[in-house]
Length: 168
Image (cartoon, rainbow, N blue to C red; front, side, top):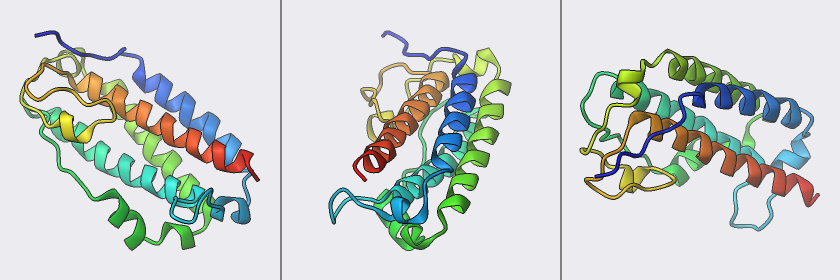
């Protein structure tokens, strides 16, 4: 089997991407953050809330994986999480600050993850169900790949926010 892994500098990419997006998005006002491209699509606030949920869940996943031989991670119902927390009704800047701080924490944890843990090949995982770029069940994968997948997932959602704002 071929191992899938990530660049060990994911931690710096996460920090840089987060800080750049924070500076860009702090200028968005409440009206813009509440806008939807379509009635059944998330607003920028709801996308940011989803990214907070993702950060929270993945932080726990990444920490637990440091002490495990597998990458079988808990799943969560993202639409339900967004709805129950009423992200659309929350303050945009509060959401943005929460998201930034969670990602600074994750970036530090990624930086502190030893290469032998980050690059350890694992075939017992559920990344075929949980990652943005699914890995076939039983295929060898690393925690580093999963961390990099988190950053790619975040970049995807940042692009969605930019798309919403650019149409206003």
